[in-house]
Length: 373
Image (cartoon, rainbow, N blue to C red; front, side):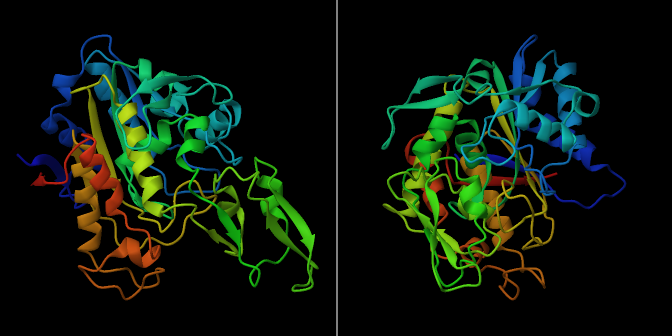
């Protein structure tokens, strides 16, 4: 039987979008999954400082209000990042979340960083995967009774797109877990583009980048990545303002996506029927919200989707984006309806790998029935 995915477009018809969020969740069956006094984790990406594409806080406040009415005890959560950025420890992470509008006064719920102060507060969750037999999941997420996974659907340089699976797996994996997932990524400096600005060196958490003398640019230096020290976190790719660092895969791009799906499986272990997913197919930027900026969207804002199946939900979101023409002025201007938008933004990244592996390990199914409200 196909998984059900509920969908609402963004036409107002004199109905608020936050009202649409509530109607979608109620129609999907959120009332049946929340028991009185359930500790409910609302999984979010709080956005990096400077990025403006993350989910707007008023949507979150409406979900918080719903959960409280149902007797739940909601809290907002995410795990610390592997790269330095502004979310690598709980102090910086919470300050970033509050700066971006996710403080208690706005959303009505406390913020708890899932893997603690420095990313070491996690639980080893056993799974049956191709790459892992156990995964390191932030303890706050593990100990929660239920979860609402709120996802901003967008493109991503490692997985083609970032949807519910990435939000779960990469998002709730502890810092050590993120290192495991990124272990197949090996950044490589493009010598002809490197300006020697040294920004990548300053942000590298593994101290793996050194500046070496080089006569190919005005600064007389270029970045050099020491492979043995590199964690594969991708911070240098995010930081470089000149697009001079690319990926030299240790194995294949598909391996990262498979590991991400296995971490997603671990993140929901023991919560069968207690996790609901809502994805906002809006501000569909060509890169992840981990960047300190967000580029012009690749397609128009399309709608909001809800499901109890993260695989079906991601597939439905991807299909919706691919059925839409690219926006003039975007990085994939001219790509037509039906053509693959994610491959257009990140060539060579076959995004279906995450869905196929997630289906194989029992996280969900790709076949879905779209029910429009």
